[in-house]
Length: 304
Image 1 (cartoon, helix red, strand yellow):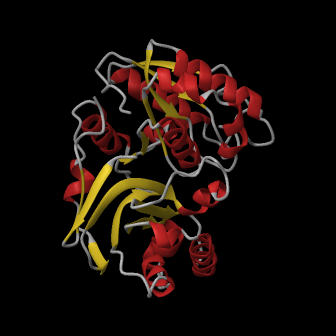
Image 2: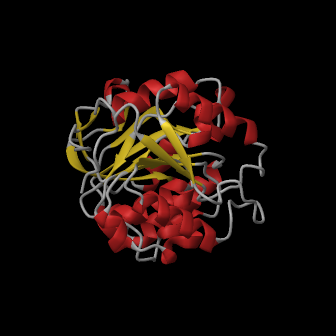
């Protein structure tokens, strides 16, 4: 299921689904992001509880679910950008009405912890969702650069940044499938739940924020024991902030994955176009992707 593209002048909804604005002092970014989008000729509608602070989360699970459902059912709202990531996006998955969401398909975008929600909605409704910038990102210094990617994807229906970026072959091979991911640590929350997307013959996109080499080993062992590597057709690894920042010489995620999957033949590709602390590409969860001769191409049909 595909959402409609965005047009200039449309209303964009903003809801808090994880961290509070005040946990990491992001309120000024919030104000700048609102002004940024209004200057781009969009109308912004905030959820009722977007400025709540409940133990560092943007409201109780009931408040988050209420805001999210109201925004999805509001036909004036053409796209929803989640406020920011964090640690509590899985707390309200069981409070959502997925049948109603299915009746009102629209663009839903965010990254990090928000990808828990993106994958759950894709699994329960079939709606293609989008790993990409959160709302707070547009109050940061590289907002204009980030907006160009946002505009290309949601208005022009193009994914040029991701498709044209150079990528590194870790293990070669040609394959295709639908995209699942993208945050490695947050994806682990979904294992064993009804919200984990079907992994059969699909491509796993992963990145991390503060993951150490030891955590990579633990998580890859967990995925292997759970049978994920027996099902997928390939892996695309994005930017891993803690492992790559400042020229760190830590063992990298791609090398650890290669070791933990040495008995498999699926391709592994490394790129730096999605992740934390960078300008993010838009990655459609449920979108079709091909890996051929080291190139990773996401197909254009991800919006109506």
